[in-house]
Length: 254
Image (tube, rainbow, N blue to C red):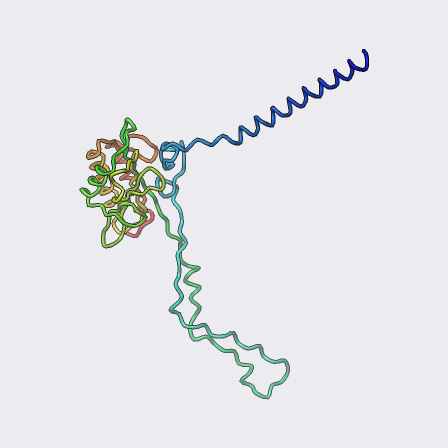
């Protein structure tokens, strides 16, 4: 081949390599420029309806957890200072070698002997089998009919003696059910959850929550499900009630 042919061949190879490199760079840049799709309402649901086998904490039935007790020592008297170290050798003042005795025992001993409190969290779900959302106005009317009180964390609560027995939240994160936004609000469902022990006897509180869930579902044309997303049948209700009563006998004082 002549020098001119060799030069043309080398130029062609360089051009092919340059086109290949530029095309890969353009494709990489385009992939970074594509916006991520906005999360659908289904993806924003609480984990109760979002993941199989999910262990729940606040909005579902999970493993029993232990809560360490707190001790408020603000009202205790100031502890006595440590005794002075006796000086080596003879002392002209024998009182210096006498240890200072505290007038009361240290309260830390009570914290060592106290046992942590066991809690149990129970939940039920309400949703329409067809997946149709619940409208805000109808939803808040049904909640009010059951004498549930809107309050802390922008959700509804069953109250007794100014204490929460159980709560009702939306299945959409963060669970808010604000009556002021009722006209434009929709949710695929509700979760009723209760932390035991509470202000009422466990068995009585459980009966109230089950009854409230049934009445809410009837008013909203929906169905009740357990925390595993299975239909909550009369048999399921009896089993849950028995489980709560057994847990109460084991962990709560008579």
